[in-house]
Amino acid sequence: MRKVVKFGGSSLANADQFKKVGDIIHADEERKFVVPSAPGKRYADDTKVTDMLYECYDLAEEGGDFGKQLKAIKERYQEIIDGLALKISMEEEFKTIEKNFKNKAGRDYAASRGEYLNGIIMAAYLGFEFIDAATVILFDEKGEYDAQKTNELMRERLASLEAAVIPGFYGARADGTVKTFSRGGSDITGSIVARAVKADVYENWTDVSGVLVADPRIIYKPETIETITYRELRELAYMGFNVLHEDAIFPVRSEGIPINIRNTNDPQAEGTWIVESTCQKPKYVITGIAGKRGFCAVNIEKDLMNSEIGFGRKVLQAFEENGISFEHVPSGIDTMTVFVHQDEFMHKEQKVVSGIHRIADPDAIDIEADLALIAVVGRGMKSTRGTAGRIFSALAHANVNVKMIDQGSSELNIIIGVANADFETAIKAIYDIFVLYQL
Ligand code: ASP
Image (cartoon, rainbow, N blue to C red):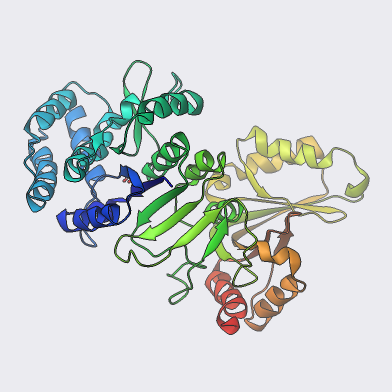
């Protein structure tokens, strides 16, 4: 067995957390490839090193004095080095960073130093080899991640190694300039490494004991999901589940490698398994509930719409011409509704309305704002009768008016539109009926 282990910022925020991570790695000799994030927050209103680096570099770019800011970053690392009683010095590294900041090496370079330095410390602490991610993760000239080249290069480079630390979050273009993924991108690095070494498992260690059925800010102590499929997670992530970087699924998915979300502060907990497919019955009919506020519904009416070929395309063209992507398009016989993000749509609404009139010639257009969408996701719904019925009776009992219903043909999710004001009540009602009263 071969495991790739990625540790998030809060798991590496100080020396004590590093020690927990060291124990976790030593507890299982299959944990051989380690991907660290930059040090995160030590306490609630602390600042992540990545944010400190951005701030410091922005000053450097304006030509300001960034000495104080850089010193504070250096101290974060020194605190870890001292706490682990390591005999390494970051002097030279910080001199190089200072020089490169003065030469305006770029924001991506700046941010990447958080993971880079943490990787050096981690490698020294574990006695593993350090591999600079800039030498194994490649981006093309346009700044797009080059999956194929990276996979070949990384595979070749890691093949002869027993164990290695590869810092998360960044890589480099062909000319050697550093490029980062978007925020939280160390999750992607972990997934890329897992794919390259054909790992049996990609363990993603964080500060929660797995993926929760619903948002803990809405539901008091929600249940943890034991097993979730990649597709279910993608549906939930799209609707706001903040577990793993959205793009982290793709590299491992292409090799069928499961992801295990684990808690550094509770290593005994089994966490959540994210898998391609499973015959394991989900504990509840639904796997998770997620949602987002801030949508608009654009209702378009036209008599005999049903028999007009091309009407839908024309309506959507008006959105496309204004650069607005749509979320859902439920339709009736003579009506069609387009759900869009309110903040994107708001300042272009009149252009879109006149565009629809010009291109599709409808009878009437009506816009409804301040709506929320809730996704009820679960592979278990396919084989269970009455799921939709239970959702709607729960919502009716909670006095929530349902504005829209959309069930994908995969029967993996049901999307419900409600007023923003009913958002939390609706999620609670659905959670209660499927999880709380099922316990
Ligand atoms: N350190 C980076 C961030 O804060 C990347 C990561 O932690 O995954 O976004």
